[in-house]
Image (tube, rainbow, N blue to C red; front, top):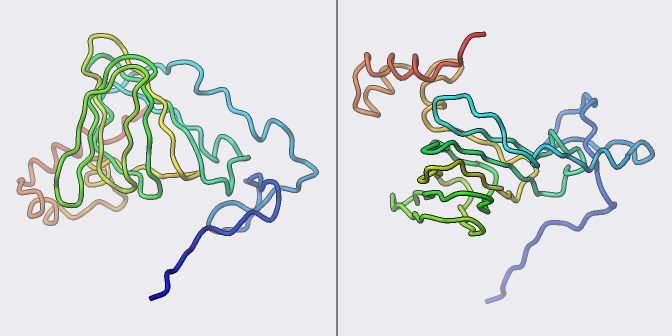
Length: 204
């Protein structure tokens, strides 16, 4: 029996800086004219400092993906920084287009993901330690210390996407029907209403 080997095609040019002004819609951005490419297209300083945290879960995510760094277009990599208050949580969520590796800058975190066999894989990790999460699986991080914590997360996608489980279920547009949530989650309509009120974006 013959084996089959497959891989992504090689790049045919040095880079394809995202042209975010283009009206062409596709899987990713079209390339900016190479003549107008500068070092600015490959630089982002937004991960250097911790973010201000002012929300109920006690964490803030700062992304460094193709939306922030046009030079990442077609390269299949991106980063994010996540800052946590003491007891702060990055709630259960998924990245539908990427695996993830976390590197702890400061603090100590409880991290984990849930397999499709419904098994929790979890560990407490400290400063300068790593933890990886396979693509698409539900996962979380929680600061288990009394001091703030920070991590850098790496992804094998220029735009990994994020779906927060609770927010996705209770604040989608249009709303998931009540009868789907009550039957699927074994809660009453009052429970659905309560969750929607808690998770609704704050009006400014």
